[in-house]
Image (tube, rainbow over all chains, first blue to last red):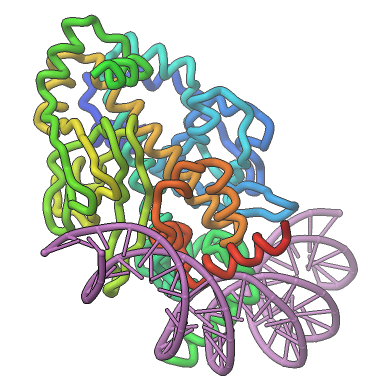
Length: 191
Length: 191
DNA sequence: TCAAAACGTTCACCCAGGTTAATAAATTAG
DNA sequence: CTAATTTATTAACCTGGGTGAACGTTTTGA
């Protein structure tokens, strides 16, 4: 998959042999819309690279879903918490569209860390990116009102607004669907 | 500093020579209460290990401080965003007590990545920890009410409640001092 | 040691977002 | 193509936290 090769090159420069070796370790999987790649209680054994489609991760607290983030083709995602600690996950990973993923197991990744030390760097860069993403979301949650967060999302990640049903967006923004509707109405009037 | 040596050992196992080499690269600095280790606009050139004392990092948006996190002796902290990108920082790092820090420059760290490749792992583990911490804070912000966040803080990080002035705690919780006062009053009554 | 500054509490009023429930619109599956 | 399901909107009412201002209390530093 050319796209993945280019993506990897943004992190570390691999020889063609190294990349091929890496690629052989991956498991490709096609998943229908609304299927789960991970469920609460399971141990997250893989990191996922999205070749096509779209996923979200969410947690369930007191019967209520809280969407943490959306990812589209070209992104890596894993429940780091569980992936790193190999403890049961507290989150669900669910496809929002028909999705094609490349799966990289923890075992393989650790093997790669040893066999091709450059992958330590890859692991570090992934973690750093993940950290910056998490902090950015933190910031929008603390600094912005729900309306501002929505505007921000439209600006920064239009794909989300285009491709993701609104009640998931509400959940991501930390509000309820009626509130998002009110916000949208307000915005439509002031234009 | 024995404490730092032990702390490092939790991340990577270094020979005494390696540790000594590492330690020599650090700059030790004593800082008074309420001094800044980093200001908005500056480039964050160092990671800080707290030998003694306590710091917070915060951002200023529309004239208002938003405290992101508190750190005590035994922790590492850096504005990763600026440290990694070497772009001007958006945050302040400020001591809340008389503090002693060991400073590790980005240059040195990159030198260590090359000279002692184990440090790549150190860098990765630091980023992973930072990520998990940021995600945990995310969670408490989305899932809990202000009162629950405060109770959570008392439980999980009693040091913060003991050592940090309340208005900084309010800022960390994402509320205003009067609200924290109300919450405390409510809790005092229901006991 | 004591005046100034920083910090914490309380009050009255306001508002964004939650809740519940009804209804409309859009999607999906058979 | 249509019934069932999912998703989105609206309305009425409620509530936790914001705001500004006044007033104690504690800490600080000269």
